Length: 305
Image (cartoon, rainbow, N blue to C red; front, top):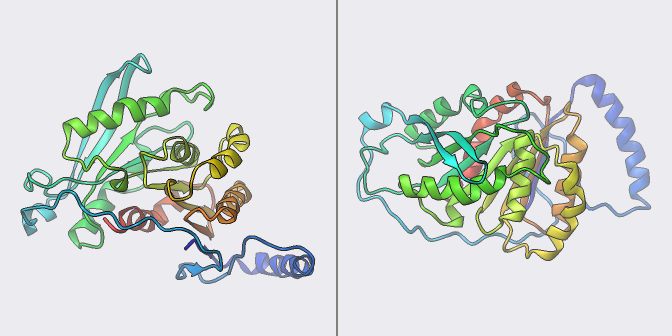
C-alpha cells in the first residue's frame, strides 16, 4: 500500500485551504483525481489510500547473529569512522563517514544491513551528523526500537549536473564494494537502502531508478528532483517492473517551495502502482525539519530488517 499523510497548517492557512478545497471539490466533480490527501494532526497515523500497490516480499535473512548484545556494549554506543580511498572514477580521494552500530566489535559473527545517506547542495557529509544521526542511532538501537545497521555518509565534493556527474558511479562501483569488503555487511538488495535530503534526495531517487537492482528502499526527504530527470521519469516507471523497483518514502514540509514537485512525483508513483509512502508535514526546507523527522526516517529504513 502507498501511505499518505499531511499535517494541519496554521489558522490563517486553514482559511485559505478551505477556499481552495471548495474549488477543488467543484473541479473534482468533472475531473478524476489520482491522489487524495487527508489532513490530520501533526503526527498522525498513515492513512491507506484506495490505490493498490505491489509489496516486496519479506526477505529471508542470510546471516543470523550467534551472539547476543550485552548491556555494556549497547550503552557504549556505536562508532563513527572517517574513511577515504582513491577513486579511479573521480580521479581523486573519495571521502565518507561510516557508522558502525553498538556491539559491532563484540558480535563478530553478525552481519548488517547498510544505508547510504546523501547530503544536500553546498553541504558536506557532516550534515547528517548535525541532524543528530549518531545519537539517535545509539539511543534507538539501545532501546531496541530499531535493529542495528551500518550507515555510510559519502561526500559529494563537486556539485556537477547529473548528466555529467560521476558521483553515482563512484558510489555504486567503488564505495559499496569497498565497504562490503572491509566490513561485515549483508551484500544483498533487500538489505541495502539509499536516501538523502534536498539534492541528496534527488540523487537517491535517480539512483533508485538507474540502479534499481542495488537498492530495496529509497528515502526522498524534501525532494526537489533534478530538472534533467523530468524527461526520464515516465520512461523509468513504464519500462521497469514495479516489482523490481525499490519502495519509496517521500516527505516534505508544507512551507517548502518544492512541495508540489514532491507531490507530483508521489502522484506518478501512485498512478503506476509503485510502492511508496507520501507525507506532507508542516515545516520548511531546513535542517530543523529533517532533525524533527529523523526517528521516522530511521524506523522506515529499518522496517522488516
